[in-house]
Image 1 (cartoon, one colour):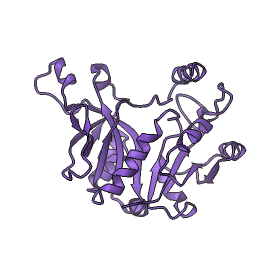
Image 2: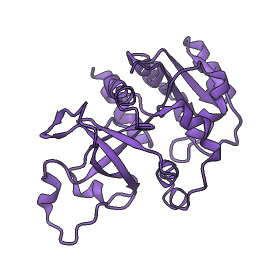
Image 3: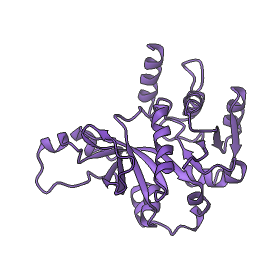
Image 4: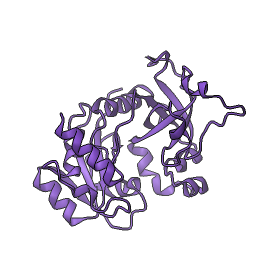
Amino acid sequence: MKCSAVITIPARLASQRLPNKMLLNETGCTLIEHTWRNASKVSKAIDVFVVTDSNTIQQEVQSFGGKAIMTSPDATSGTARIVEALPSLPDADIVVNLQGDEPELVPSAIDAAITCLEEYPKAHVATLVTPLREKDALHDPSVVKAELTPWTNESLQQEFESCPQVWRAITFSRAAVPAAREWHDDLLKKTPPLFWQHVGVYAYRRSVLDKWTCLPESPLADLESLEQLRLIEAGTSMIAVAIKQAANGIDTAADYSAFVERFRNK
């Protein structure tokens, strides 16, 4: 089933670990421009919008030819900001939530998430995961883990390192899940993988966002500070697409310096 899709990039100036990071421009253009330009390469999206509460970010986006939608500063999450912007978005079937600090995510990964919603009508949300092979990352609360099971519909099953590419998301956690009763390091090498890192990109059916404000509150989402748990607790069907590796998100000054170095060495 062919669907229309738009990409939205929630962006705000307030950032505890790296203030004003959306406007950092040591590469010659701002971080938000890098993310916007990368998102513009997604072949299945008809348009890209930055959703922001900052006049400064709005002006920056307009200066490089992008489209920005203003929202209130009261939004509690990126998704809530997108929900507020829905009336100003094109009437697309799928709305992608891409973080503004993900300028290096491979565009084909976003295309894959959109494709999943086209091919799997029972899925309400598509997201991305990658195998987690490092013990330190498994126990790092800043690395979000996903518990998965194979999707029951076999129509789009492909091989990814000898395992199905498409999975059903059971839950997400900052803890080391699933928890092995008896640990040995070879568990990290299993194929199919036992441990998965979540890549925070979401392709929503518009109908999910239309009902967002009616979803019940989620104690787990509040506890772990993971908004996707609100969907899981509400029984929303979420499909996960496996990609080979996560992009380098930018949360700290060191992350940004590394990004600048990679950019200059291209």
